[in-house]
Image 1 (cartoon, one colour):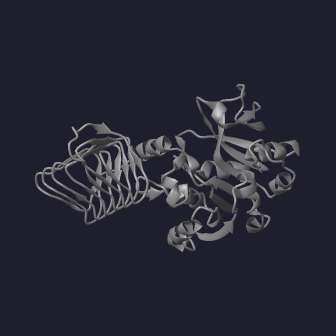
Image 2 (image 1 turned 30 degrees about the horizontal axis):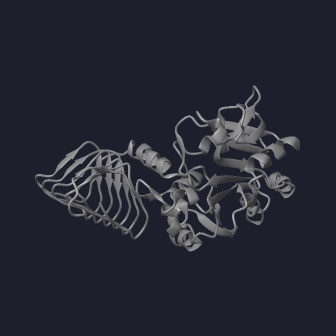
Image 3 (image 1 turned 135 degrees about the vertical axis):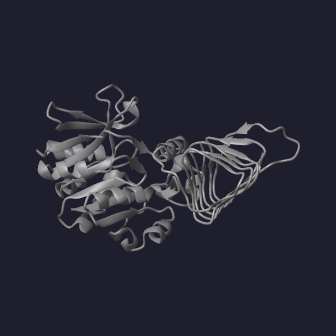
Length: 357
């Protein structure tokens, strides 16, 4: 069995964060989202992985993954180019899978517990396809699956206007090569894409058996800033404290806090976990970092308060206003402007930006 990770798409809902690279590389708890997907595939026993590249700086994906050996896998790159839907991206992998069954993982998904159970079920039941599902409160925003009494998928519908099911089709699928014949006969949807839900339904209509697997833990599609923050919260919630850097006497750490190598927390700083600090950070006096915050490598926070936020690599925050539920892109600065009374602020800032508030 082989793996396929989709790392294309324009990421319009994540701008400005996606202006400078694929959305799949945005770090969740200081780790690129794409690597969580790769880990899940490898831990399911699959080590040959094809990575579908789009038009948005694909070289950054190549730079991160290389040939895959660093992560215990073998990576093959497949160029999709202009995004024409998930089913189109899957079809681009036809030559790579070379007649083997394969798992497809959307690179902006995050799943607790991995995909080992889904892969085992697919093999044991000798299915023609399998899809991961998650119960959601707003099924009209997703593709949903309709099941029979034995867990077989009867059909899939993309963003139904009327209630059919609360089981959302999340971004993890398994197929045999039969799916390629189906995709070749698909017609674009109203939004001009080849829909994966239509491909799944086509497999069923051709007499295939598609198995369903419902996620028991949590799942997040990190397609919007608020989703990324929630995913960061969920990952940090399972954090175990560890101190590798320097915590000066008089600094206060409470709860589960990870302090990366060569990071310095000065006297007078207060950190309340769960908090993740990367390597080579500087947390200055009078800094407060509150729960569910991650700080990327090489960043500085001084004379500032940050809570429930994602601060990426090489960021400087020296701001009298408290930042909450914010995302600050790499190499950016959040500084105080003169003449303003300190108040709370919420920001989403892209790369290489300076903001004074």
